[in-house]
Image 1 (cartoon, rainbow, N blue to C red):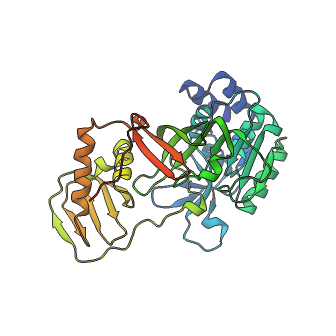
Image 2 (cartoon, one colour):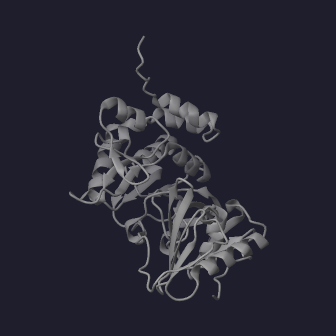
Image 3 (cartoon, rainbow, N blue to C red):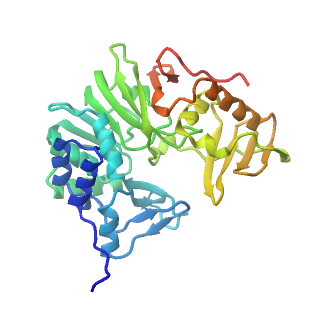
Length: 367
């Protein structure tokens, strides 16, 4: 009897997405008509917690492509001899399905995609809407060329452009829907102005305190946009929106007992609240055998490091960990709201996170 593991197939992946309620019958037909394998190059990597691992062999390649996992398709912006950081990918099919569902695509709508990547999302949109209604922009010319070739090979010819997706598309006019397939630190207002009133913007946002949350914005008649967060979403950042992991910290460390398990900081609801209350505070984390370890820093040189079950170490001016604990108690006092109770409003003056109602803005702390 053979003990070889059966390689998963793309129809099974589409069935899984349907069974999980992530795609409608219409979108299921679209997904089945656009095999993911046509948009994934031969050389790819699997994203592990601490590195990217090359995928070797046809069966391993097919197993990854036909699974609900992201596929890393570029390291180090394509440069040779880099540290091996993922810079482009084919997104998780379940995340693609979620975003397309939130986009509320209807017959006849014009869609602008920011971040063509491999071309897979553009192909799905072309299958659903037709080539002429789909526009996609990609900054990296090598990635853009590969996507154009894959799209043409699959029989799709959307409007493609090489350029900065943060800037408006010259001559495009207003579109009905905008989807960003790269993480943004903020929604550029100039880009928002390319969406007609009544249109929808779906984008993953990554701020200093939280690594990724999906937002669904509805564009208003006055040119502003507002809407709810729709769960977590980890995407590679737009190049112009990248941030270094942490600030430099100053001073000797000071130890104290932790009044808060650092794992609680990773709850997306709290992260959205704390990110608004403590602007500029950056957080990174890693899993440990006993829980998590987190590092937080601020531009003034303050920092703190905490691990589950251990003391907190603070550095630099002020008491950054105490500020985070105070923010947690505030979060508890407003009922520990889930992430879906928060939303975002974008205007020509910036963006503001709100809780439960756009009028209830979560304002920065005075600490």
